[in-house]
Length: 66
Image: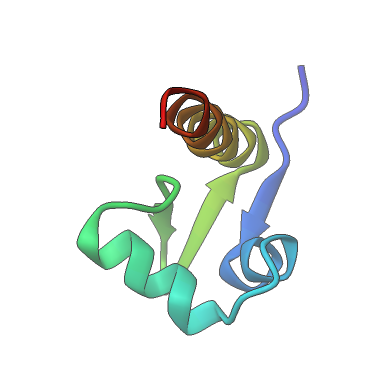
């Protein structure tokens, strides 16, 4: 299995937001988990996808019950 690591900028592009927003999400604990490697924070692509699915799944469940 190959692990693909994403930069903060790549995560931001994936969610059409700014790198500052991704850093803020990480700071307040609501974004995908990242790992600090030197001065950079890298994100496992699979973990980012799982984080997104948990957000999408939660919204769908909320909309169905609303």
